[in-house]
Amino acid sequence: MYCCIHNAKHLEAAVDLFFEDEKIITMTPCGHQPIPDNCLLFDATGLVLMPSFIDAHVHLREPGFEYKETIESGLTAALYGGFGQVMCMANTNPVNDTAAVTSFMLQQATTSHPYGPTLHPIAAATKGLAGTELAPLGELKNAGCVAVSNDGRPLASTEIMRRVMEYAADFGLTVIDHCEDPTLAPQWIMNEGEVSSRLGLKGQPVVGEALQAARDIMLAEYLHLPVHIAHVSSALTVDVIAFAKSRGIAVTAETCPHYLLLDDTALEGYNASCKVSPPLRAAKDRAALLKAIQDGTIDILTTDHAPHALHEKLTSMDQALVGFSGLDLAVTLTWNLVRENLLAEDALHRLWCRTPGQIFHLPTNGFAPNDPADFFLFDPHVTWVPEADNLYSRGKNTPFLGQELTGRVKHHWLKGRQLF
Image (cartoon, rainbow, N blue to C red; front, side, top):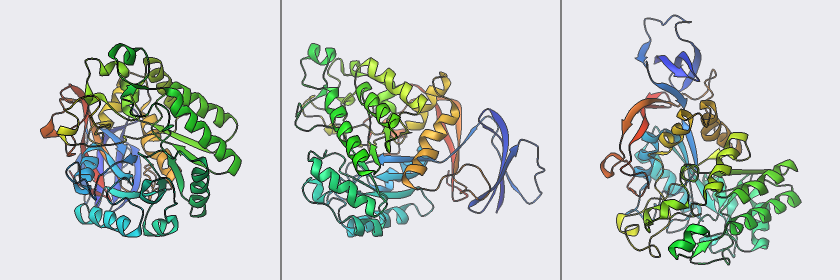
C-alpha cells in the first residue's frame, strides 16, 4: 500500500515521508511533492519523525525467568518504546550457549511479534557463562546470534578473553564485554566514594571497570580485532577509551540513559530502587559521560534493560538485585537531553540507530529510497507519569517511576505496518 506521513517534523524541518509496503520511497520537504489520490495519508502535524531505534543490550529473561519478563512482553515494551530491533543477552536459564536456546528465543519472538520488533540473540561467550570453556560460537552464529558476551559474569581470565575474541572473529562476531574486575570489592552495593562512605555501604571503585576495559583494549590492539565495551559508567573508563581511539584501536563503547541522568546521590536514604550494575557513579562521571556521547568517544546508547519482580527490588540494600527496566522510557529520557540542548536530535539517531547498526551489521532506516520502512512518531509535548499500569514491560523497576516526564512515542511502523 502506498502511504504518506504528512507534515512530520524531522531534524527541525517539516517533511512528507512516502513509503510502500516494507520500503521507503522518498522523504521530501512538506508539500514539495503532490500526494496521489490513491495514497493513504497520515497527518503527523506536531509529531517528530524518527527511525526505529536499536537497543544493543537488553535482558529478556526468557527462558527461565518468565516471572520477570517474557520475550513477548519485552518486545511489546520495545515496540511502544520506539525500538524496532533488540539484542538480548545470554544470561537466561538455560544459558544461550546452544543453538536450541537461540532457536527457541527466535521462535518466541516471531510467534508473538511477527511484524517486529526483531529479536537478535547474543551468544554466551563461555559455556554456562562460567568463564572457563568457550561456547560453540559457530553453532550459535548459524542459529542466529549477532554478537558474543558473558554479560553479567565478567571474564576474569585474560587468556579466556583472548580466545573468545579470536574465536568470535572467525565468525564475524563482535565481543561485548562487561568490564568489571570481579576480585576487586566483591559484594559491592554502590559506587565507592563520598556517598558510600557516608551511608556506610560497601562500594565498587571506578578503577575496577577501567582496568578491565584497558585489558580488553590492549588485547584488541595486539590481536587487531574489535571489542565493544558495555555500559560504561565512569570518567576513568572514558579516558581509557579516548586514549585507545587516539591510537586507532578498534574499540567501541556504550553507556545508558541512567548514567547520564543520575548519580550516586540517588541512593541517599538507602534507595534500593537505584541499585544497578555498574553502579551509578559520582556527578563528575555523569558529566564526563555526557561529554563522551556528544563528542563520539562513546559510540552508542543502550538501555541495559534488566527487569525484576517487585519483591526483588523492595528489600534491603544488600539483598536487592541490580538493574533497571529501560525499554519503556529510554526514548523519553534521552529526548529530555535534546529539550535541554545537551544533545542534537540527529545525535539520537546516531546513538540509537545508525551506529549500532554499523557496529553489529544490522539494517537501519536512514529515510533513503529502499531503506526499511521502520520508523516512529514521537510527541515531544505530552506529559505523563510512568506507573506500573502504563509500562508494557513486566519489570516496573525504574527509578523514574512516579516522576512527571515530557514526550512519548505515539505511533510506530515496522515493515511498513502501523502497529499502534
